[in-house]
Length: 163
Ligand SMILES: [Ca+2]
Ligand SMILES: [Ca+2]
Image (cartoon, rainbow, N blue to C red; front, side, top):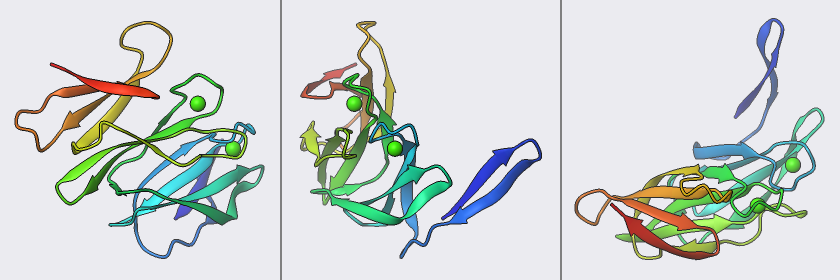
């Protein structure tokens, strides 16, 4: 992966991060709340997230990993529980089933995932505050359950379908 730095003259290459196989999805957010955005990526057909912490000169070359129960097809970040640490949401697929993995951020970075909406294959995910209560909500599309419909979920509570 190549990282580019923006400046008055445009983008210049800042660093290159080796990745064993092609990343399928990536997202950048401050998962550990240290003020530097961190990079989370997942390779094709892999259940393992690779996380490079952000640092003043770019991303740290050394990565940590978290293995999910199923293969994430997309990565989305936002502070869903408003604790000041970015969290990660990922629709996951394993065979004909899947779910939505929620990985909360914290001082040590991302923690092991909780599975929301287990059993359905859902993507893509968007995060916004639909009900105006100040907590971000999310919508995912169910792909294998007949007509597409929204699934609204909140981190830490069961999701419910909306039409
Ligand atoms: Ca960080
Ligand atoms: Ca959070």
